[in-house]
Every structure is written in structure tokens, then in C-alpha cells.
Length: 106
Figure (tube, rainbow, N blue to C red):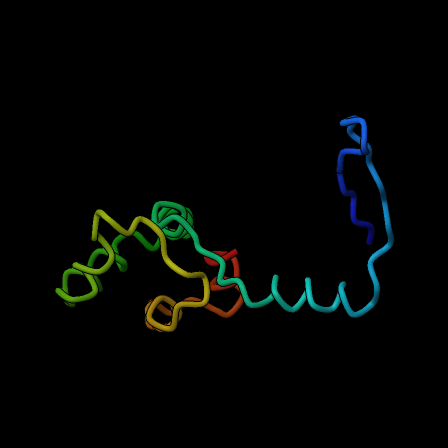
């Protein structure tokens, strides 16, 4: 993995330098990237569930749980974390297999 850096020399000209990152720097970058929680648009999750033929089950489950319904349709938070425990439990309760859950949260 390389780092590309742009600087200016004494005359003001832009110069580019490339250096290879150390193993420690690469490990730090990979650890930081792994710690970032990925979000999905709720519309994407809903679309994938519709494609799986689960629209009726989703509607029934949300209608039965006003808190879940309110959280799902909160207009100022249009995304959900892909690893959200509530989302994963909801998908499991719908009877999705682990492969289907992985597809929904991909």
C-alpha cells in the first residue's frame, strides 16, 4: 500500500511523492476501517425484503410493535446500521436464514 502526498517546493511548484506504508501503518488503517460501522438506507433494506416476498410479514411485524414502527419511520434518521442488534433480531424474527440476513444487510 502506498501513500501519495502533494507538497510545494521552495519555488511554489507542486510536487508529488510516493512512499510505501509500513506494516504498522497498514495495520492501523485496516483496524480503523474495521471499526467504522456501515449504514444502509432503510429503503434499501425494505426493497430487499420486498424482493424476498416478505412485505406482508414486515408490515404485520411493524404494525404489532409501535416502538419498532416509530423507529423505522423516523424521518430524520433514514439509515440503519448494518450490524444493528434490533435490525438483526427483527430479520431473524421474520424467519430469514442467515444467508438471507446477510443479503439484506449487504
